[in-house]
Length: 342
Image (cartoon, rainbow, N blue to C red; front, side, top):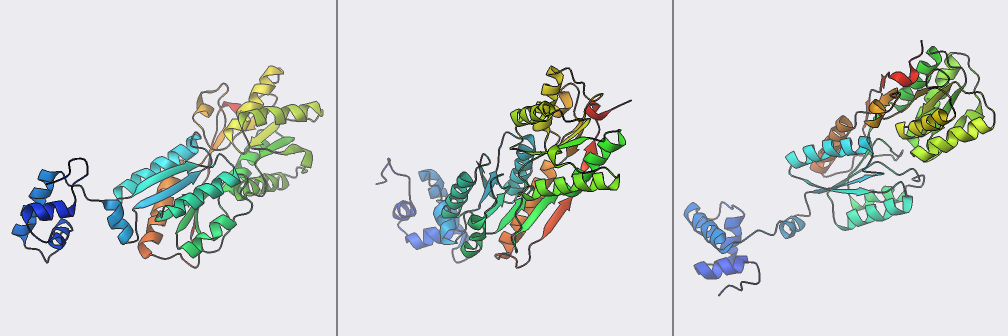
């Protein structure tokens, strides 16, 4: 008699049909060793008893979980939510489940998340690292665990790991050049930590544009922060309190640009007439705020799809490549009202 409290097992089906449990197991796994008529009888009885296969146990025996871990700084950012949409869509079609975690830009939290995902035997890992991820030993050890890893957007220079990124240098260059061509000569740059590769490249693009047009670099115009809206507000406040002359701002994300624009508005300083502004990432709010913000588009959905495709390729090959592959997406400047000068 079947225990109604517990879920039916292979042994329950075997007892009900008075056949060997190994035959039931083979039938449920569609083994050619079991006759089709026998399979039909076993499958019918399994359905009658409400039997459900333990896919987790089955997959663990095969050393797979059909699960992929995704680690992002903040799910609330439109770029990351768009990337996750691209990741999930492709993973689902390939038969994989996705576990999504956010580091909240904290290295210690990121370490614990990665350790937890590996302990739970994910088949692969996609990550956009935190702003604090300067030491990345916790990612290098994944090689010893045999877990494939692909970076997207924020990445680390670890030999053997693949990345899908935007051309951050070109994005920084185009943003700064755009402001220069609008007549700006005193251009501020809001950056994330310059130890993080994407902010380093955007800063280098900023420097290259200044150099091309013969504009002197002023280190006082460079402010690093976590690039939240309040950071943009406080950074521009500090600069103006110093009495620095400012006519342009290139921010490494839209949120800090919005914070700066709010402070300028409170002080009666007009955008773009007095200070022209360019952001980065093309957050939805950048289109609807007044004035709308000129920005660099990052193509989150496309980046997510390419990153998961690359990871699935590594998982299928059952090896971590000795030499990682880097896919670089083209950046695109979207001009809006915050930089439109007559």
